[in-house]
Length: 361
View 1 (cartoon, rainbow, N blue to C red):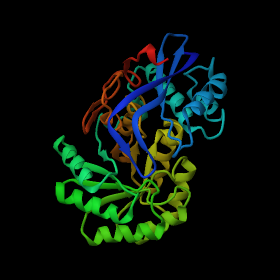
View 2 (view 1 turned 90 degrees about the horizontal axis):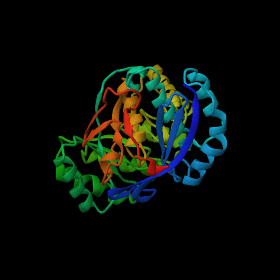
View 3 (view 1 turned 180 degrees about the horizontal axis):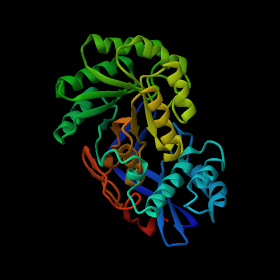
């Protein structure tokens, strides 16, 4: 099964409502799609999300990285020699993790097809069903409480609340949501690097004092501020999840050696795909630290890949794969089944896509 061609296209999917964080506001998913064909007629699909404020990757950069640097390295390689293919991919250029992720995902799709098995079984086969949270965008407290009530009515048992834009309002937001939905629902908060370390400690302690029962706080400080992250972790009772701070296995190792965070968030767009995500899982297993699997604003293509990884590995205990649930439509046939909070992984080979429109390419 030799790589014959790599094509790049685009996908556009409107969101149900604007997605707002401390870093950006987005109204639709505008992602890059990759299609890899082989000499045996097999096809693998991948996807890259251009999230410039987090990964630094824009649409043009992703397309350029794939066409100019990655594609020439991979044409003619055999999927059977998978380690060689992965080494070529990840050494083709530095950074550009989203472009690498799209190709990596498509290659793992083909790897599963080569071995006639769903990918999650080849990677570990721990489970075929996972339960995700859903994100509540940062808005005025009343609107966020309303959105939270609607999510709970749809069956979600865990909500991830975006904060980080206004410290005093952040406390009002969480208090308003707690009052609206009660205490049977888990609340995660995500500051998206929006606080300074001492500010984060003050805010989180006030939330603790008010008894708001926060399950975890995600990336309270700037991504590069590992010392600040550790300061927060050492001084609050709420578990701290490192997200934007972790792009590579080396990042994960450094954070865990420092004890700078209690949990690690894995996103394929940061790691460059499944290959390095598996290494982060191994690092976390050594330190007995649980992981979350998350996503950017992505369609079902790449989120299906993340679901397979989550299905494979027991160290991934928290799921934040709500991208497809935030979309107003699903243009992808096959892949994982997203039924609100419940994600089921079918038994089809690879990632299980049955047809992805040629209109994307």
